[in-house]
Image (cartoon, rainbow, N blue to C red; front, side):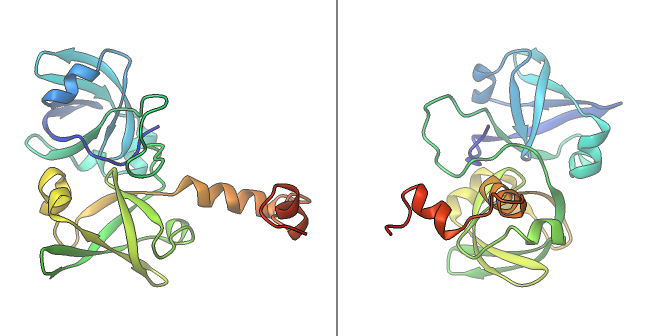
Length: 209
């Protein structure tokens, strides 16, 4: 489990036959062979390490659902190590399981804030709400506006400088993971006899009869 707070931007050293090698800095001290690591929001397993890099294996399922397959030597990637049990959740709960990819639709400025608009498929848009959370290339962001096929976020200067989002351009492909809470609410609401009813809310202390 991750939080969407990017720790550093690594750089792709090589990517051949499903093996991705990434050079990194301080985050390497938290890793070992077998560790989980989020790369552009994708949860991957560390399969090898050197003093200056780590390697992961990319499966076909991951390639089909994310932008990982487009990476090439020299590309920057967002990196985050797993959330320690009991640690602070600075962003929101991110699984590292990409739902789909989206595209940068527009970039504009509001003072020092970079306003980004992303086009997203229906399977992601159904879970996006204004002021809710969304993970874009692994970064936890707050939705500032939405319509039927896209959503908008505001990128502060720190996030722009410490992640790959500041370098994105219109048309670029990004990894999207919707908030897990919305998925669970939908599942519970659809299950026969287990929907969120007035009786359910009263039983669990959300309403006083």
